[in-house]
Length: 144
Image (tube, rainbow, N blue to C red; front, top):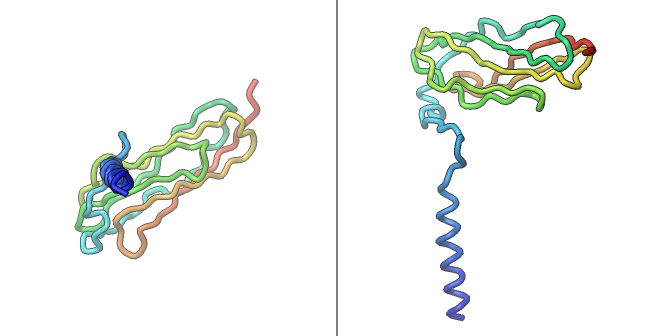
């Protein structure tokens, strides 16, 4: 029985040690991003774009501009592309009231011949809804 208790105590200590560690590179989201008294408003200056035609294999940089139209800092909590062919990241710093920011992404057209219609989902500390979506279209032409 004493071996069982010692094993249980060791497992608890080790488990607690690992539970508190955040993986490297994980962005730290401030508590204010979840406090509804600190929510603000956002205006998308361009939430839909058509990039025309590109050649298969080309990487396409996309961006979507927005403005913090509220009176509190705007914190973009997460940016999630709709599929693995697009990579995106949130701004690293909060956007001050009245200031503009950009959501940047990169689309890899390799193996994506034809019309592509892609969404990027954004979570922010905004009043009304915290979930937003931006969209882009691009036609990928067969490479040589």
